[in-house]
Length: 197
Image (tube, rainbow, N blue to C red):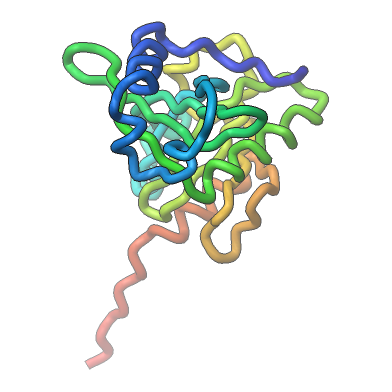
């Protein structure tokens, strides 16, 4: 399998397991999670990084900057994912944040299945672009890299998850060098028109 899924920090996994065993499941706004009969298990931990595209308009020297904001686990109930769980880093360490469902759940699973068919080994991560309400599967070309660090390399792949912004194809693998300029243009402020008066 060309995907090298990283191991999440043990406290992040423990916080999700504790949430699954608590009243958080019954209180979650995720009908699919509440209706599952049988055990629930967290799988496929993915580090979630955020890219500030505005930073790329006047980029610092080097690669685009990202920051790790959490770990996301797909929650499997029976033979399918029924929800996801996010964790976040707090001053006291990793803690459970929330459960959710929605289109990114199936889209993430589909993108991971697509990536497994590739011949190049990758480390899967999630890359969020908040300015565009966009989430991508980031396929990092160094499968042994620290999943909490690093920036997208020009040859890494970004697979936009559905729903993707208009004009950007969901589930199409783009090289970072090709997609990042498009994203930068989308969030750049419009040029000021000079007055002729």
